[in-house]
Image (cartoon, one colour):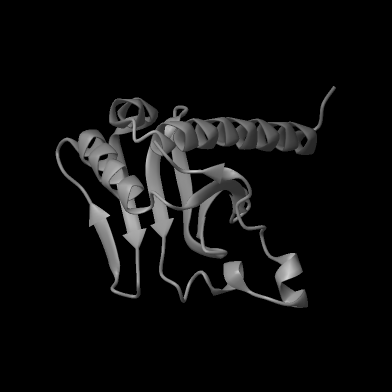
Length: 153
């Protein structure tokens, strides 16, 4: 007999594993600028929210949301062609961080529905990334910057 807490922990681990798998697939297709691959990862109602440079939040929506979001992500990948990409924890969930010249320039998190990406949130506002780029002893308790994956075609 299992208790509710044990079942809840098992579901949480399974959700994290599913999210991590989708993040890895996103990292692969996005790193290759594979727009059809991006579309396959997205739900038909996918949304993209980009918070950048303190200019406010831009929300991309259209009737063909999946295609618009995939096209926007492909364009964004081109803007970050020299960045290093890596898996990190974002708000307790698997996500991505991009690093250039030793500084985190963007953090990406996703929301899933039915095993596919329903929401993509990109934060590239330097003020909101301050803790990702912190130096000194305080930084040791912060999520690690990305290690390893270099974006490229």
